[in-house]
Image 1 (tube, helix red, strand yellow):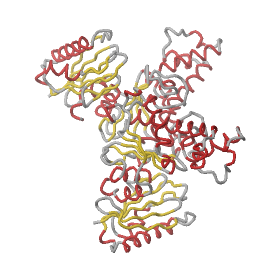
Image 2 (cartoon, rainbow over the protein chains, first blue to last red; image 1 turned 90 degrees about the horizontal axis):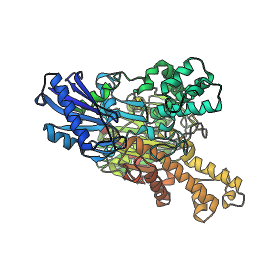
Image 3 (cartoon, each protein chain N blue to C red; image 1 turned 90 degrees about the vertical axis):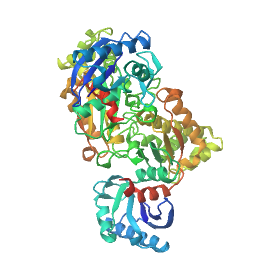
Image 4 (cartoon, rainbow over the protein chains, first blue to last red; image 1 turned 180 degrees about the horizontal axis):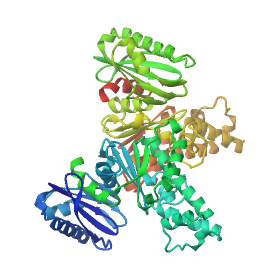
Length: 314
Length: 314
């Protein structure tokens, strides 16, 4: 039997048909066009799933279940996307609506939870029972795996790790709070920090980056060419990321922390200083319970694989 | 059958004989005299257990197991107190040493973990599967219960919730880091905040409190008499406590948060403003996954009951 995994993003709907060994044997990706109604988006999720099945020479009768990873707050028990600002979805019973079309069970979890589960089943976290995945993207997402299962807490609202404090009353955050880790450690925050540094030091190569087009990669690239202002921004950014990871080490003592999102492609460039910071700041310092800290392996596939695996886990 | 629970503190060793319904049927408390060797302290733990058994008309043959709640980092799997500064214990295999004397299994966990388990089995958290206990004392301790069991992470080093950040590079903390929640939300921190406020406002009633003798209760008492500087200190202190609890809500979405330690005797005086802060700052604000926030019920008994229950849980 097979399972269908759907990674519902603000930009694309990525669907995969997943076999019992957590391999994606067929896929289909279509634009989300999130300005549309939830019904229209859900219809396209279904059609993309059918396309992926056809490509694999399969039909829905060959599938046990469908799993969905969605952004925002997802109530797994009720199968409802409670709040997803970038989809403009509020209280959308996506599992019921998609289940009506296919007549097989549909499961739901937050996208970062799904990615954490996917990495645990088939990626960089294989063999680990307790791990945390942090995605450094537009925001800072978190997925917690405890005893091999997603831990999401009451109404599946937990693991909003980007919304724990780095600085009380600090930078404003999208969530309405001030000083969240996300406001310092997201890719968005890195770009903002680079633009602020450029303003202070107009002779820096950073000042050639434009607010409209700047990406996190640009900032790393300028630093790698030796620009001292950019290096200082990157160093401080790594400390921000690491300070939040240190909180996770002290609170949860996971065996492994994986970093996902585009920034994790920087690899050892960011992992080495982050590991050093954690080892010197965590409880017990170098004698503390320091986890393995590594980059995620599966990229966007993690979310599809994890979503497909939701039924087996819940 | 019965179980023995030992709450090993820096000041006292409190032992209880606990029945299958988690009631303490007999107890014995002796001073820890922590300047002595670990062997001497462990000998007294054993003697106190025997005294408690005698008082109940029981012998060790009536007992299944012994459980110990100890301060600091405790490795439950190895039965070793890894690091407990206020006992001056480092890598003390307390379970093996006490087990030799009694010939029954001896379990170990951190004292805050035991208190969280005790409240879950027989106190204010009865009926909850996912909860967090925070003790506001000399430090800020944490115990996490997930799915009815202690969650302590790798080498049982997690749940050091007092050592997550409130302010990056803020107040120095005993752990070596700067800006930990403990450095703002412990009873010790409240006293320090009150003394600092008194210095700034010598006309305040706070200025009559002395650094050598000040207690957290003194600060609340002065505030309750209407002193505006003291009220401001207490209000800010409640916000510090609540900001850390908000982090826990966003990260773990527990169903219940209990506050323990002497300060929790202030009851609604602190609980009401803390609840309001959490509801207005957590992810999703009032629509978020807001837990019940209440005072712990069992006081020091929670640690004894939780320690006695360790065998059943692990």
